[in-house]
Image (cartoon, rainbow, N blue to C red; front, side, top):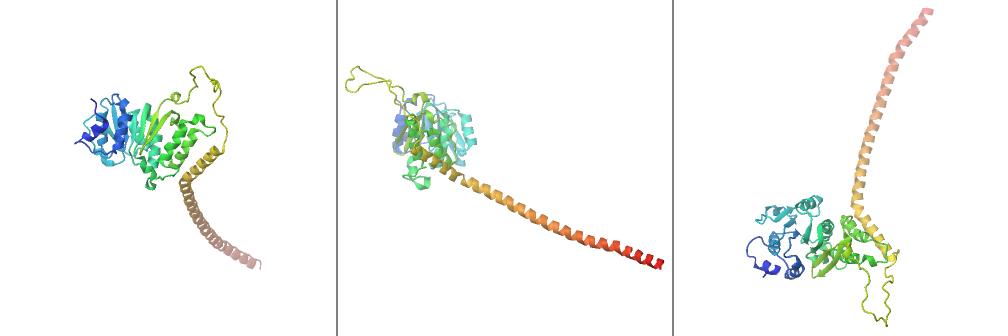
Length: 338
């Protein structure tokens, strides 16, 4: 009989250490059950002591690749006898680290974010790695309770917490019903502007479902054709109470509305504020350049004044040397005529 993930986790007495909340283990038993005997690829962001990677190796016996990434440089010392397990050390949000992970495995069936839990890192990680999630795959974010804490860039109603971000994504699932011209990309980019990341190229239309449990968010991915509402179908023949017209148009008319206008304005303001540090740096650089040019100008002015003084002195000296002989010759001629 196949052991549950919780049983595997609790039975470990050696190997690298790991810790998980008990409710997570119960949740993973159900969420990962259809994949347990498949040749899956797993990515975990944030591995701490490295033991969780061994748990995934035991839980998915047919797994092909199990990749961990952690910013802690000490993780370079983690060594595994299982050739399926590998470690990348560095900031998961850095393009070079993403490239290193993609070089190990181009596509993952399960991605678990157990990293810093700071909102900016959670949102950046999603922008980076959701495109690497396979069709039918699961993207799991642990310890979402941190999004309620100010020290983790969150708060109960803070509009740019990681939880607020995933709540926004639930609207994207239903984007075909919006009576607004606002696009899903525009809605997500407000978070991108806040945390300096881009959602260009992120297949937001492939978000199939978002499940929230205590401190965990699970996003499933499917091709966009599986995510549409589809066509209306009927059953039975007696519609004596309410006439059924399957051809009736039920799609919304896309048009500007006050809320999308406010959302765009909010996004523009956030983007403007996000660009302030860059603009401040540019202004400081230009001011330093101006100061340097002013110093050079002052030096040039001083040099010009010095040269003018030399020229005046030279002129006076040259005039004396020329006029003295002329005066002597004039007096000589005068004497000779006399």
